[in-house]
Every structure is written in structure tokens, then in C-alpha cells.
Amino acid sequence: MKKSIKQQLIKWSLVTGLLGMSLPFTPSFAMNTVVAEEALSTNEVAEFLVNGEAIDTEATMYPSVSFDIVDAELPADRIVVDEASLYSDERLFIEAPGREETYYHNFTDPTTYRDYSTWLMYYIVYTNGDMEMLHSINFTEEIYEFYDELAFMNAHKEELLHKVTNDFVWPFADDIDHLYELQGQFAPQLIADAKAAMMRAEEVYATIGEEDVNYNGATEIIEQMRIGYSALMQRYNNRYSQTPAFNFYKSEELMDEALADDLIVMVEDVIRTLPDDIQRRLSDFYFVPKGEITAVMEDSFIDAYAQPTGVIYFGDDITTNDIGLVYHEIAHIVDFDAYAPTSLEYESFTRFSTNPEWLEIHEAEWGKPDQADYYYNDPIESFAQAFAGYTLEKYQDKQMSELGYQDDDIADRPLSKAYFDAFFERHNYNE
Image (cartoon, rainbow, N blue to C red):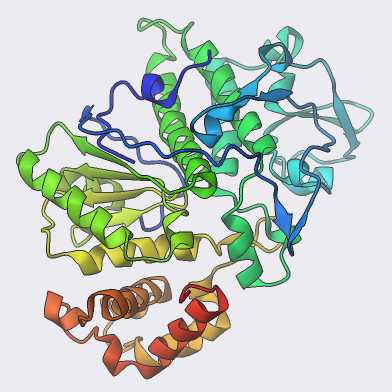
């Protein structure tokens, strides 16, 4: 079960190391390997810091796996899960009289980092009103009989995606800027728990034959998990390696492979202009047929999209001149790293682009309420385009109009420019 990422993603093609999907996109095609780039580890165990102080990331109310730290080139490879601890007979009971609705995280009242990073999905209600919360680690034979393979695998998918989006750090944040800083950190305990989720899911998937009625559903789940897992390991490696590296995947269905190679060079060149901290928030990049982009986003206008996992997908109709698009998609990753619930009920959320400070600028310099189909009426998109214009000017000495984006120049939007001047200063991006 200790498969490497390269083994688990054998159907993809690794080259090196969007807006708004909460689940990983699962391409329906094969990918090809061109170059695999690795970065040396700092050979240190990552500490999760809150206001500069390391906090406890081990304690939890839930059963948890144990792991060892070994020497390895990449930070994620240093974390080795004890397979004997993959399952547990421990139970967690809470009082829940009269509660019949779907489980919400607030039932358990988490208090620690590892509590918050655990996503529970299933429950059994007993006649006395107690509720038995089932973390995926509890799926022993006694509990497994209540669920089929798809339910078991789906529980682990939700567990993994909860970790890779890293949006549970908000209880430790003082404000949205502090939340953004915390989103860039991943404790080794979280990585160990994610590895365990992947190991359990792979173990079950290996038992499902192609003739099984659950095979197609299980395959979809495991492919989503593999993409999310790859992104999480890459984000962890990028955060704690000496130099961030990026994985670039290109579809075998691309008509012009040479252009894809040129696009990879262009994207990496753009990435390398950005502050180190922003680079470390990125993970994997996919180059796919335009139809795969439009099928997922249901919008033929979209040329690329970003995900909260640090993954970006580009359609094959972009050119090597589309550097503004690259900055725009990276801006969504920046914005996603300030995205988090504001309570355990997950009913309201925060992010830079919907914060009052940006909304005021958006209304003053971007919104066009008289044009219902204007793309930047969405503050999420105006934030990304403003970031793109700002970084294009800052690092390339160009305006968006020079790339064909009329009326998008940062030079014409002093409030937007001042916003990102202050943003870069607050986060020490000018050093």
C-alpha cells in the first residue's frame, strides 16, 4: 500500500512539478510523462505555527494513525504511516437526542488542529439518543457491514479533500490575512492522516473487479482521490522544500504536443516571477483539450480554471502570449487560500474577493450592473483580473490591454493597484 505518487498516477503523464470547483476534476483521458522535477527536502519536520508559535497538532478526540519520520529527499516521503494503525476499534459517542438530519461537523465540538482536520461522515443513532460518530479509521469489520465499498471510499474521499483544501484552519486565525498565512501550512500529522485515507481506499479499490456493479463508481472516486492526493503531497513538498517544484501534466489527446511543451515553459516562467510564498501555494498544472474545460465549467468562454487544491487546468487553445491568463488563475489560488467557513455549521464563508474591503473597490472600479453578462461583475473574477493586471505590470512591465484584454488595465484602476500594493506589503512579497 506504500505506493508513490508516480505509481498511483500511472495513467497520467507527468511533465514536471481553477476557478471554483470544490471537487477535483477527473479527466477522461490518459496523460504522458515528459520530465519529473524534484526538490531537495529541508529534512526537517514541519511545525504548524500560529502567531509564530508551534501548536499541538497531534492531540485529537478521534482514533488516529501513528507514523514515523524517516530520511528522504522530499518532505512528504519522510512521513511513513504505521500500517498496523490504519484501523481502530475505538468509538466516539455524543449525545444527540432527536437528531435525524445529516451529520455536521459541529456535533463533535472539535478543539484541536487534528480534530478540525478530520471530517466525519457517517453515524448510527441508537434508541437512547446517543450518536456514534464514525471516522473512516473506525471501519472495522463490525462497522463495515453497514456500508458498501462506495460509501467506504466516499468517506475517505471527503476526508482527503477536507485536508487538501485546508479550509479548516480558520479557528486559529486572527483575521483574513492571518488565515491566508495559515492556509500555507500543513502539519505532518495531517499528511499522515491523508496518506492513511489513501491507503485504505486503494486497498478496497483493489478488491473491486471490473465486473462488479460498483466498479465504475469506485474508479471515479479513486481517480478523484489520486488527483487530490497528488496536489496535497505537492503542496506539502513545495512548502517545506528548499525550492518549490511543479508537476505539469499534458493530455495525450492534445493535437499539438510541441505547443504544449512551449506552454509549460511559459507557465513556469510566469510562476517564477512571483513571490516565493505564492509559488509554494501551487501544486499541479494540467494541459487538456478545450472540450474538457468547457465540459466541466459549462461555459465556452472559459480557457482555464483553478481549484482550491492549488491545481490549475489550461485548455489547448491558449497561446504562449497568454501570460495574463496564468497570473489570473494563480490569483484564484491566492483567493482560495483565504476561503474558509466562519463557523462549524459551514453556512457562511470568507475570502479576499468577497471581503468588504475588496467589494468596495469592485463596485467602484469593476462592476457594470447595466451589463448583466459582463464577466467581471463577479467580484471573484474582478479580484483575479486585478491581481493579474497588477502582477503583469509589476513583473512584466505590461498592461492587460497589450495582451488583448481591453478596459482591464491596472493603470486605470488606482484603487485596485493600491489594494495590491498594500497586500504585497502586508505579506512581505516585496522583499
